[in-house]
Amino acid sequence: MIPESNGEESKERKKMFIVYTNILVEDQKAILSLKDNYIVIPFSVISELDVIKKRMDELGANARHVSRFIRKVKKNGQSFESGISLENGGMLFVDNEIGIRNSSILKDHNDTVDHRLIAVTIKWEKSNPHIPVILLTNDINLRTKANSFGVTAEIYKTNRVNTNYLGFREIYDNKLFELIKEKGLVTSDSLKLGAIMPNECFSIKGARHSLPAIFNGEEMERIILPESIYGIKPKNPEQELALGLLLNPNISIVTINGKAGTGKTLLALAAALHQLDEENYKRISVGRPIVTMGNDIGFLPGDLEEKLNPWMKPIHDNLDIIFSPDIKKQKKCPDEQDSGKNRKKLTKRDQSQYYQEPKETWQKLISEGLLCVEPLAFIRGRSIPNQILIIDEAQNLNRNEIKTIITRIGENSKIILTGDTEQIDNPYLDKNNNGLSVTIEKFKKEKCAGHITLTKSERSKLAELAANIL
Image (cartoon, rainbow, N blue to C red; front, side, top):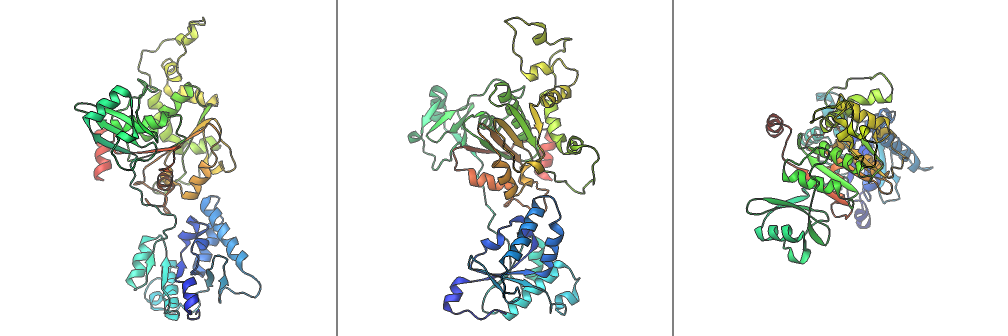
């Protein structure tokens, strides 16, 4: 039990938080962020950290950091039972869980970590009635269980965002349509659209047609795209706007959120290949977090490339679409036949028409070092200059992992994050704390960033129907 606070003390420490494991492995600085409060780490949480710290991923790294921090703050003459004073004004306890074995919750229900934490919270509530005692967890079912026992349980809000930013608007304004069509841009003084984010996109509807436009911070300017981008043409106004962001040399980070079949990965790859042909960048690197949907298939044999192949198959599928031949194959590429001064420079997609399979072309790009599969587990400490880095399924990365990746970006590089925040396979993440959502919200006011949420599926009628009703 902690002593009842006097007036001055109550201002410093207002609440007591019983902290669950998922908070600590999501945010290694969680203890410090709960400043000016009492923090209790139950014995069961320490045991779970001991297991997780052996993992060779971000969760394992966070578990090791928290374990070292807890030991580091303990000074001579102090004990976890009576509390360790922290520099941020808080006080840290480690509860050994002695005395909870006879609690009704453990007698009437299974002896699980969840039930122990509820019993620990009830124990601290009884011994400290003068302050609010809160079980802090991101586990929705644990919060429900706690509430059923009359225990206050809250979600950890520090790393959470509530973003409704779509990155684009549809405007029905024939006058603005004609103005953009004629002049190509409109000054911000002429716009009466309220607050506009840098690089926010607009689909301006006229009487019969629409035009894509972007706000560059000072003016709204028309987006003019190449006739075809590696054989890919936008199928709807949203895709037009997405390609405008992807091809804009002034935007160094692009985030694309959208449901299955909206073309996120396909557009990102096509735009990257187009800019590679334009020699704006020297290489394309592609990565995806290794998170399974459903049961893990276990150990994968082979070298690094063979191990990554199952995870990169969606990327390969999109490359197959981009490099699929649509003209009659010839025995020899015209680019190879004509060696004179008038030799036409063909894009890599044009050259692909003369190969037997599209796979041969993009594999050639890999063998030439122009297209690289990036294992995200080894990206820490890297520097990535003069490249386009595409991170697919970014919603399965946490805030720290996204930060690690973005801080690798060097000069004259562009990073593209794609994903679906409604389809998260990482059990520690949700719509409000995953790395993609956090990046969208934190970067939306930055001039170097652009975002768009794609809503219209173009994969097939069946795919769109499934995405909408299932």
